[in-house]
Length: 328
Image (cartoon, rainbow, N blue to C red):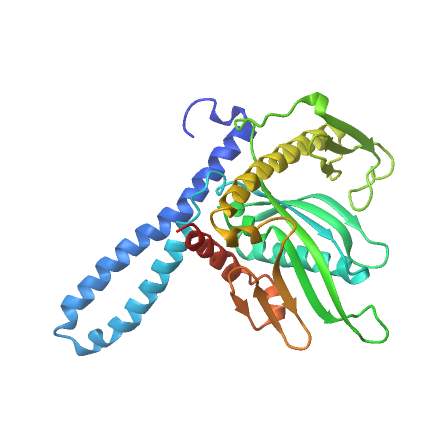
């Protein structure tokens, strides 16, 4: 970072800075733990002559063991793109208006999780539903190990509740699909032939400022061989939306290659087949009782609203540990 000209290319510079932040997430608590272990060792020595100090040791040891477990979980973030930002897409699926509302609730959940962890969110697309909620949204989460933590959220999220949109107060089951890809820079090569990509320009819709519906700034790219579609409308200029759309397309195709490898692993590890964009991974219940349960790991919480307020770290950590067990 001190080399002359480092900041000339802002995108490359920010990528390096992001990698540094990700490394510090692991190294800082590791250094702190070494210091705390030395302090604990000293407490053992002094505790032989100080009963009051000796009584503090079990609690100190318990805290240290908990921090060690947290550090071991973070050490599982060792895949090639785990340190990258995460491009998250949420689409409302079956369930009518309830599904649209559910998709918006999930966006709020991830936003609150990101905020509580000091991550930044950049909105790329936002398609509102006429009645309530959203049809879809796409956003980038930037922060240490963002993709590493969020990649396990890919799949179908199911909500069961008494519908606020049903005058008869009936129970409604709604579904939303989440897809997570790593944001990649130009140093990572993804083989895409330009003739395989169809570009459509259109007027932006929804939030975005005065230019909305006045200029054809929105860009949609379709990768014809795989039928992969990306859409970006939040920037004011068509040029910026095009650049971001291409970045999103490259990320999607890179993620598709990862999924192929996961399917190959599923031949050996049967449970791995539960991972993927089209599979149901988590159930959220508001009726008849409150609970949220991950169908892969078995991890669950009994406070629905706490989870929807962004307390999802337990689910993210349990997925990382589950993946390791499946591969053993």
